[in-house]
Amino acid sequence: MNFLVNILISAIAVAISAFLIPGIKVHGFFDALIVAVVMAILNRFVKPLLVLVTIPITVITLGLFYLVINVVLVYIASWIVSPGFEVHGFFAALLFSIALSVTNSILDAMAGD
Image (cartoon, rainbow, N blue to C red; front, side, top):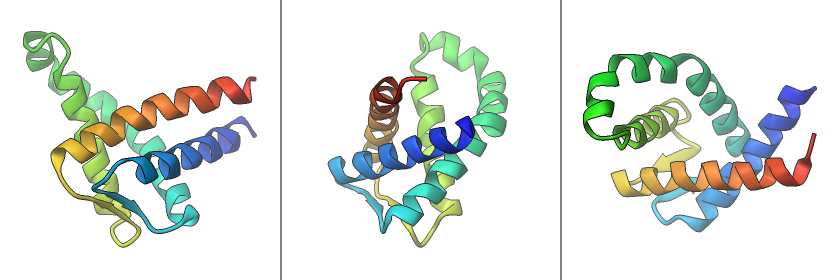
């Protein structure tokens, strides 16, 4: 049940972030829900592998390359949810990943346990 609540909160965060950032388009709440599920799967399985492979460059850039990993995950999600989720540009994807994290944190805090 907790997983479903987290996915719904993430879908709301995707919709809010897509509304706020130019260059990101989500065509409906169902697509935002799909993006939330895809991002959850990517963050669970792909992100640890990318972080592990890019440890040297992340250390050299003092952790800033971690943001690039988040952008790559947004692009992969855009590729998977192709007709319903569009990303136009690197900085739009960067702002989307940051806004998604902030919005998700705020909504999680408001939802409580």
